[in-house]
Length: 291
Image (cartoon, rainbow, N blue to C red; front, side, top):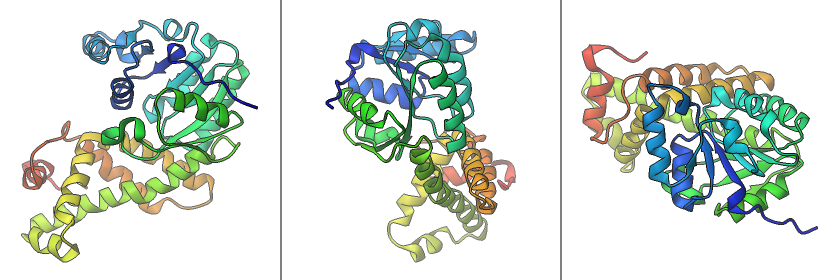
């Protein structure tokens, strides 16, 4: 059976952080409607409306307004809000609306969200974003699972995503791949920070990096930058990773350490475009080790 793609004019975004802005700009989604909860907060509303204007999307004052008449929804909120967003938006969905949950959460969280969306008449799809959205943008790899995976692949592809693959008909399969992979990816970032803090204290940064290989000067700089910019979000994701491991009967011993260090470093500042030396100074300001 041929699946008709969902037209761009039927696209809505719930959540408009880095991923939402990046996708909207890359796809020139000027017909898309958007709602972010920060629109409703006095201290963040102006900045969020400016984000909408910069991206050329149709910002809305409520989820109900953004979802009205829309048949494809991308949920792009923070990990700790994924289920809440599904619960808040479910009453406003048209029957048959595709709800693409692109948030980095545990399979069990996605299954709970799926129950909410399906009970409201929507079609829930588990989508895992498998790489940073910058610089990949609409070429970022997406894994899709659930009963409506094939329909979602067609809809996402029609709206500009270039690397979308279905990985099964069970909600939670795509997110399992993402969550288990994050044990390594985010864990290496945390290990990099721990290594660099120790190397800096010992005065052997150059020697340690050269012993690992010529690529590690750039790699360490990149890993620290990602933690400074996205550490809080990564910590929330890693909490979902820990939940995933516990559900699988695996003790998240290393993952707990990753959560702590990602959160600590993410709490320092909103990132720095400067070099590795400056990042280390930022991490150790006031002489406090990030533990």
